[in-house]
Each structure stands twice: as structure tokens, then as C-alpha cells.
Length: 166
Image 1 (cartoon, rainbow, N blue to C red):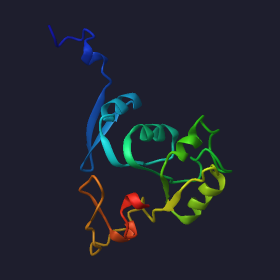
Image 2 (image 1 turned 90 degrees about the vertical axis):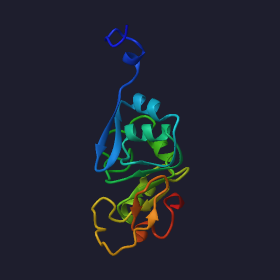
Image 3 (image 1 turned 120 degrees about the vertical axis):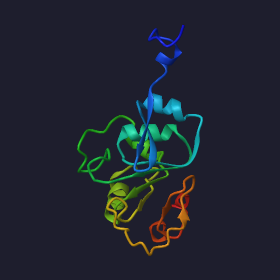
Image 4 (image 1 turned 45 degrees about the horizontal axis):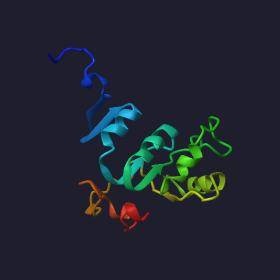
């Protein structure tokens, strides 16, 4: 019979939940479960919303044409005078696998390039005011569609280029 909690295949499968957040489906689960749930998919772009090692470990497991990470502060990178914790094994190597780190300003980009791995040097680019909702002008042309989504961003945020060209 079925349906009981007797340890069948369904009981051994890692749990992944789908949660609706701000109009988007978000998958929630342990790293192994998320990798298993997404391993057969391919993405145009994967964006890690932080430089934290656990998020980068998940991001590099996903199949994509481009991998970006957002650097928000000076204490999360595993290097430099402001790092908060001793570096985790492999953290700097994970950052090297990112195509580009998107930072809130030029100063942060320069900090990452100065204190980060030198061979090869980290690619960094500013993503002006991305996390502060400064782009509220409704007259801005939002016809630039991001690859793989129906979402749009103001043309001046993209600098006239497709995100994969950063």
C-alpha cells in the first residue's frame, strides 16, 4: 500500500518547497535538494545575491551561460582588512568562478580588485543603486527585457547593454 510514512522513495527524496514572493516563485530547501531540483535546467544568467560562500557554492552548481554575484559590503569577502571572519576554504576560488561581481559603487569594485585574488584578477562592475530602489521614475523606458524572464529594467541601469555583456 502507499501513503504511509514507511520510508518509500518519496520519503528519501530531498524536500524542496516553492514559495511565492513578490510575484516570483522561489525554491526553498537545503543545498543538495536545490541542486538536485535544478540540475537538469539551464539558465541564461545565475545571480547570487551575496558573496557568502554557501550561496556561491549553490550558484556554481547551476548550469548557466553567465554567473554574477552581488557584493554589498566590505566585510563578507574572504580577504581585505575589513573581513569579519577567517576565510572559509575555497571561498576565494568560488569568487574566481564568478563572471563578474556587481558592486554598489566604484570604491567597492576597487576594494575587491585590490584585496582579492590577483591571478586571475576578479572582474567587478558597479551596479548603481541596485539595492536602494532609486529608480522610481515611471517615465523611464523599461522595454529592455532581461534574458530568460519577462522582467524589465530601466535602460540606463543596463548601460544600454544586455546583462550578459557586463
